[in-house]
Length: 134
Image 1: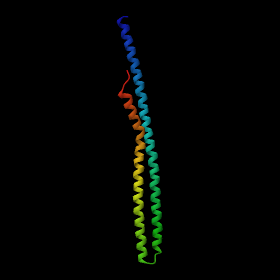
Image 2: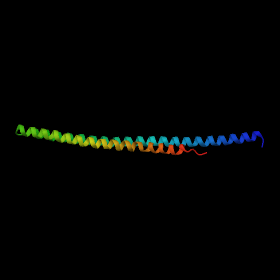
Image 3: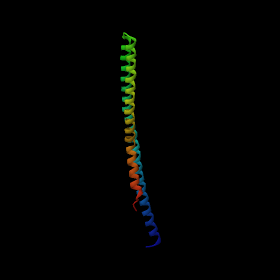
Image 4: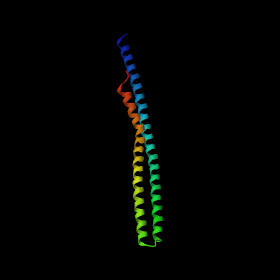
């Protein structure tokens, strides 16, 4: 075998390895893009659900306030009015406290679900590139 044949074979092998590596990187990058897109979709869907929950909660509070104010109009004594007002404040505080807890839980769950596709890709990258094959 002469020198040019050896060089040609080495070049061919190098080009094959380069082509293979480029294809792997492209495929891996496409997976990363898909994970980011999936993460975005999960985040949008989660925020839509949370927004609906918050709107329903606000509507329920508004309805309760409206009914309390209607009741206040028909009170017969100052004590009855003060009791209704205190009841509204107590109920509003309890509802706000409960809704804040639910919102915090939903936010944490959404953050975990949103990060899941990206976390999977990071895990895959560590597994794939920590032990490169020869």
